[in-house]
Image (cartoon, rainbow, N blue to C red; front, side):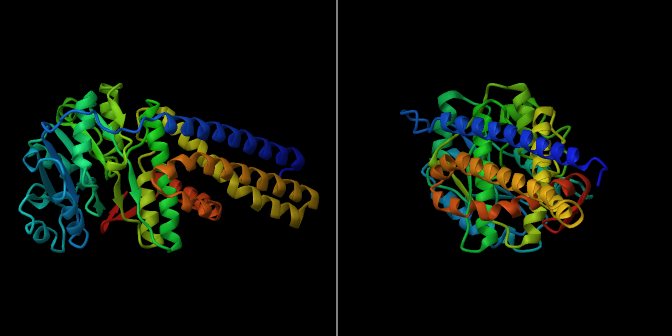
Length: 393
């Protein structure tokens, strides 16, 4: 411990207070932006003219695909105006066989196009499928998702209303009573709130490949994944940033219950961490450095929330008791403040997803959130992870 420990303690607490204040201001901005985002109810005129290609990259998804394909078969959008392409990413199960039971589904085998290891199979799968697609509008989702009956109809309606080049849409993570699934649902809902708010403000910082749409012309204009194709993750956010750089006013958030896509949580702690490490791995890959500094600031704040109670224990054991108590009280106050404003930000988001009842678990989830943020953020930058049976750097 530094010789001048009282000043060291005061410095730490002061930095933590400043970071917490900045974080609260960010949350208030996000909340206001989310509430300003208009709920789309339809343009009021017939829009059944845009041909849509739905792309579904799939690796060992024979168990999950039937539910998704069933919901796609139930679409209210005219069947002659959309196609569904599943790209089988070297599956070892019966993914292709399941798809062949649905006549409206076209299956592409990635093994027919890739004969040596690459770092981003998903980007390559999407790239090949787009090359064979007929759609003016490309819509992507994941094989473990379910879509609403008016999903494509509402997307087409929204597209015809203002002709955006990239459409970000909400994703809901399902859950049962298991604590890990409830935690993921809360955490994911927070990310969705930030996603909608950021796009509404023109910051274009986040999106999720489980529910995206972009024009074929925009994809071609930015040369698809060229320049980002060696990055394992980022088939969604990194592409959005490329398109946003070319069409800054044409990135839109479609806030509608009719386009909410439901996705499944990770079943184990290990798979959960692998997923979040994969997401964190692209944090320093954005051209917009503002995103990096926001992520870094939030990471440092969580580091303080983790370290302050440990340092207070050190003071209790090896220094004056009052110093440890001061630090512990300061930490508790900042943690309560941080958690309270996170719940305040999340309430209108939870109301949109009809998940307000989940908020009562948020304070209990806060400690785990702090720990996982530190681990996933660090390993996303310096470690490796397993995804779909592959080890990725």
